[in-house]
Image (tube, rainbow, N blue to C red; front, side):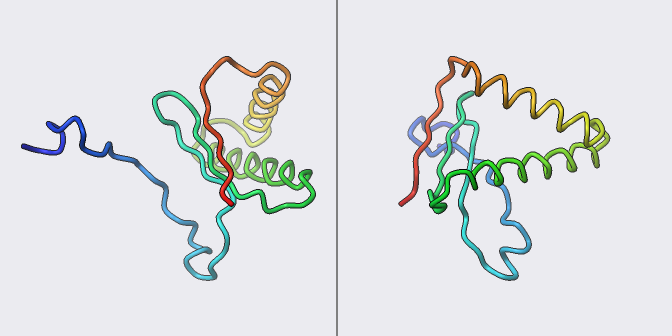
Length: 106
């Protein structure tokens, strides 16, 4: 019997590799997200006393995403940033009715 025949077998999870700089210099993971059965599941460390720093973190993530999409020819950095900004603001103003699990790591 293969693991695919066993309904109790763990499901595969396609995790990202660690950032190369983390392998070279170490660091602290502060945020991880995964799509599981169409829902966003997030774990994080609430490491910042000033929660406004999370805005800076999310903005940096958006910039890195925009650069990656532009590098792949999926729009310009400005276009991708505008789309991310629009989606972010839309969901902040009226969160979609979807299931998400968010859990802090302590």
